[in-house]
Image (cartoon, rainbow, N blue to C red; front, side, top):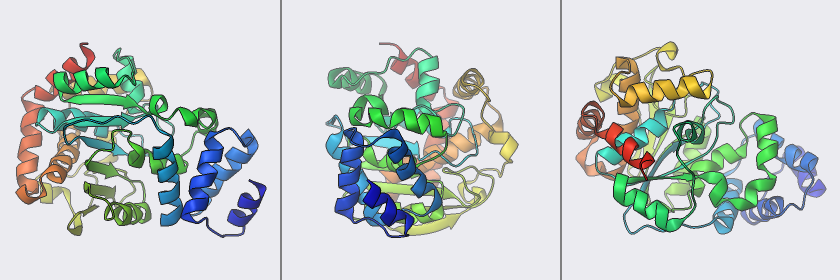
Length: 328
């Protein structure tokens, strides 16, 4: 590790194979906490390269507990780490997307740089995490969605988890999260916290057979915040769009703020699902859900996707999906 750290501190980068090997060794417990912390810290101060990202991704997927579904499942998630502390937009969007007919295999974790991640909010409502493949399949059959708590599918990362928690800031593991879904989804909506990372994701996904949409709010959000323009990369290219392009209002940061605790965040979450959220909160969920539905059927266009997302939320179908997920 000393050699690797010296190279990185000297502004050199790792090859794809070197990155893969380092992460395998990191997961095996070969390095001490100080070395692991230093390694993670490097990528908070310099951009990760496409080769490094690809190598880290390959290692994580090699080491994970895989889950295979017969349906073409989708993941809807963000990298986190944008420091904006919005409410759980991508998690809510997952239920809207499932209600609109697209099976969802949601990959999530506890919040690192925010008060409440997707795992925090579902755990608060009593959801029991599982890595039992049959139980996940039953969940998908029952609710059209299943939830995979990342640590249960990446056991090799148990050495890294305490350090990430202690650091409390985004690391390259945030960048990797959406790429290492153990269900190997064929459709993916990803929100990322920087434009550079969005480009890198786009480059890597172009080399796969996935249907993908990668989102970045140009004011720094890892999702469509509706606070300003956003950029999206998809199978056919890249575009900049505004809230008006989706037929949705522009909102303020305060409109989409998350809670300061898991309990507060859960209250906002439930209010929105039950149709008691503000117009601005609902619009943010509709925007991200629509881009996910667009990802699943890009030929149908975004306008139809917005209509489907709005109907799935307003009709209460998304709330029904949520209740079915919790009702084992």
